[in-house]
Image (cartoon, rainbow, N blue to C red):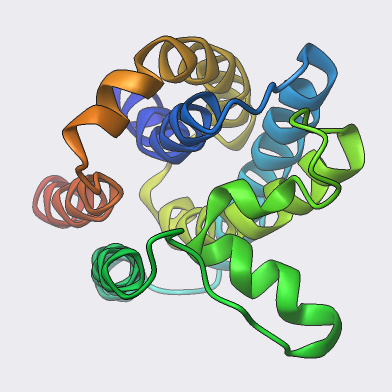
Length: 207
């Protein structure tokens, strides 16, 4: 159970940071949009865990643990790298965003670096469709994490349910703490990567 709680916490940490960024930018996230974000994120995580759990039945346990360690550590390192890229972008531009012209995939790439880019119509309110695009970008890490953690004997259904409800708590806390986080001018998304690396090491040692 502790594994599921910790994994749900790690996944919802990004949601917390997104809510904080939106609050600081004066963008509202209605309840419906919050539900869309959390539902998609939980569904992707649960499906990924289920698929890797099935695959684990055909792969030796030791190899599963090794693969899980390698992939989870890689995701953690990529998350830290993404955080460093965000810091660089903010220093290169006072508005803290990139102008990307990469066709239909441009929005997803931009969202990966700038969470507030989801408010494409500038309405200062995140619509369900915009929330879905944001959730899609955020689910990339959740999918990769789930595919790696399924080898650890983690319950997909329980973890997905915990992630869903943890997401609501993350939005609430992030909305309250948004301005304080922004005032500190700190990029905190790297913490999620560090926690993921720590989780991978603990799972490898204790598994």
